[in-house]
Image (tube, rainbow, N blue to C red):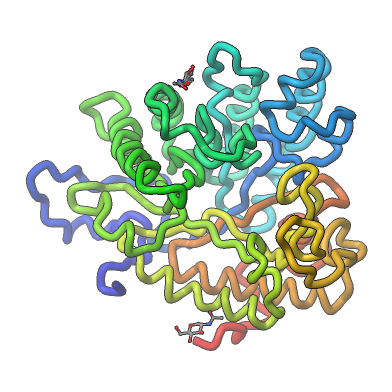
Length: 425
Ligand SMILES: *[C@@H]1O[C@H](CO)[C@@H](O)[C@H](O)[C@H]1NC(C)=O
Ligand SMILES: *[C@@H]1O[C@H](CO)[C@@H](O)[C@H](O)[C@H]1NC(C)=O
């Protein structure tokens, strides 16, 4: 629907918005979306643990049953776990990283945080202490002129069952239990109260990462109501007074047409949609050739034009394999080399993941092309946020923006192109 699509994140063409009954007033966002694309990175694996981003944190426990932040708190000595977390929070990200991100020409970071940073229920083994680091990170972002998306990445009961929701379980239970949802609403209100007063540094809040819409209509029903409730919390944090903070809803793995007309202007103001685009989480995708990966990336520009809300590609990466250690979960292998159950081997993982020192010149040239194809396509929408800024040294470096800068497959200025005609349109 190109007629409805506007490169302005918020449909800032407020003068043209005919006010209708109960329409909210157009907002004044803390980001020049009209003139600037979102170009950002995710601060993954810091305030929410993911085994593949910091394998050593998990390996050092000596316990193979520790596979996520829940079991990290549950299955080892409490003070050992606390000390390891504190050490991780103190060192994995520091002010230097935020300075480096800004120096790379990026304008935004997305910062995942789990519900347990705000509230831990009875019997839940999570260890708290993340909040002061979130506050510090917002201070660093402000100092270097970066914008921040606060992203609630894990909800009680888990909204997707992935380890990155805090709890790796076979079926999400967030949506099947009204207490879980009520707790999430309360936590989101707390987040809104804490951060909507600072829209210059925190222009967007993402109420929930990747709810698993594919599990069925019951989940989608709960998600849609949760987005409406989140709108109230974020856009009206103090009831009558409207904020300038944008609500960034996730597509719950549904298509643009599914969300057509959902929370759109003029009735709703300050809503954007987040979609995540990976090409490594199925057998058919890891089997694609390099040229097919690039063609698929280029094709996303057509898909992004179908949204009637402004769309940010809030997660994506130059990876073309699932070879990074623990990427599919601690103890689970890779589809690419056939070590994942129900997979068919495509090739060896050697030289495809791990330390970028092992990457061939050809592979790095491909990573550069694939990176350029993706950012070119995603800038058809409101912009992009790569997953992620960095990994533990020597692991999964094909995902890491910092490694890309160091080894040259990502340009020092994100608008530079070596392959300006990589996408044929
Ligand atoms: C619902 O979730 C809460 C935690 O949010 C838990 O205490 C309660 O036992 C759950 N209820 C059921 C029926 O599973
Ligand atoms: C890209 O889109 C075109 C047109 O819709 C289609 O013919 C082609 O098969 C797509 N290519 C890929 C790799 O998805």
